[in-house]
Length: 394
Image (cartoon, rainbow, N blue to C red):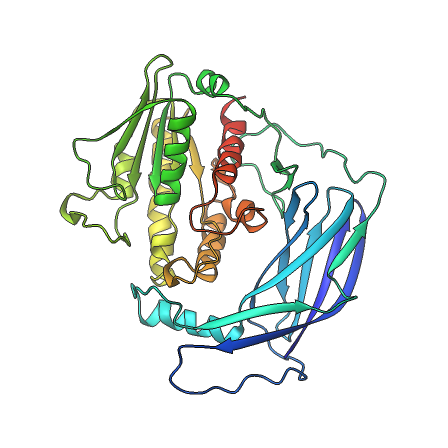
């Protein structure tokens, strides 16, 4: 089957269109019945495939995510912005075919909370870009390395697409500009007399442990500690009066560990109990909802949003931080990228225009150089937290 791509590259005020064809193939495995593969010579006439796209320059560790538009007729548009000059490689990868997406939708809506170690769709889709089409672009222009004029970082700023890119391995925001704090003493000075609340899943727990280790905080379990998955876990830096905690967002929790559900806190209740100043509240509602209908996810995010807005009315100097899902490229259904991307779009829209800091962990992992995994590498976690601090440490 042949998929048609229109790649749009935006360089300053100039727009370049590249038209090309990409062959895609699939193979089925772990199936009881044979299936006929699509004819590779036949042009695809329908949409619904799920792609991920990025541009990158390996030499300078520069990369940016692309936006894929589905025209519904077998043609897909991919838009990139190029903020640097040089040789650029375009990567367009099919994550799921439209057939696989239909199966995933049915699994989520008709068989909620289904858990499996294997991808039941059993489809491995690969994009093969033909030579001489869109595999490599040479970019040479006078102001390719210019710095955009951006406002000072503050909650509630609108985000362009993409919201940033990597340059020399560092995340460069296109939303706002703020300080980049690269040593522990600067972190402590910035966060003095603050309380950090990391509320969510294991990717949020990564932030908790990274900040605690970086600032050499003493970590201890709460007297009400349930498990590493659920928490609560606390950390403290006495000299600068910094406290931190991790706690799960509550049910649903997909874990192989036993958790006493009778004393498991609900995220809304946890937020409603915060009634002190100088809190930085980081919230993630993501991976554990992958195998639930989207209507349940929307309902939960709506209640969390209401709780956060109540908190902001009680304590106006609270910093609210939304950390969406990240890419995983996993064969485990519960952390499938298509599921996660749908939730990413929903939570981004539901918090749009509100006075929150939105750390776009989807885009930051969509074009990362380390291998995709449910729990991103420390170098990516660092860039995510540094972006947050650019809002807090003005």
